Image (spheres, rainbow, N blue to C red):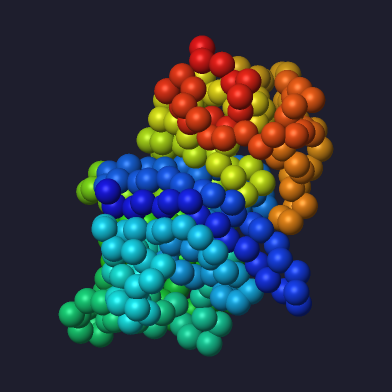
Length: 319
């Protein structure tokens, strides 16, 4: 197994206040698979994902329980020098906010070349040529001009493409992509998704964090749905889109635009995602759920098998 994340608990501590952000999350990802980690903003997707290469700010973040194993090695206790050798070379990360992830002090060419020179036995000229090639692959029309630019001189979409090139340039075994296509137009989005498909066909594993169900439907082989710091459903992608089980998963898909819903008002999920530290008692979705019963507000449900899926709802029924 390439990635095995088990019973992960993460909290944030600030001036004596403790906020639980991730509560018992577990999933696996093997080579050649794409796991789509989906859910509304603030549900804990990015926090869970960034714990894998230990890129959460600690403090205030603290992993209180759980295990993250990559290719059989426990990452949470791995010495930092060894972890740094894995980052980039074997674990690539595409960050959500490109502008704050790129150094404002250095040109794009230097930043891409540094990634290559740190992990590959290349000359400076060869590293620059490889950087130029990857900028072209992610749809940047003038790679040479981009190499000599600073991040602030690029548009948001161009910055995001640079970030994608940086995450993929070493062709790592595991790619963690956090909302990788948010700032991209449809044409460039298709190019980037094709690059990711090529990597996963080369036996890489891809963890795709997004709230865009359209992207997930194109890419994922397996789906994990998060809500309020917990996983509420896991399933193979084809089965998930055909027969979602959890009421939240059903609501997410009903809110997704498609040709079948053209001309009809899309369904919205009532209420708001509870903020971390203010989760409801019992089932965390009960106050927004169309099929909630009185007991849902009292008893926290477990993630249990249901019709070939794992579902955190005692009233989900196999179809």
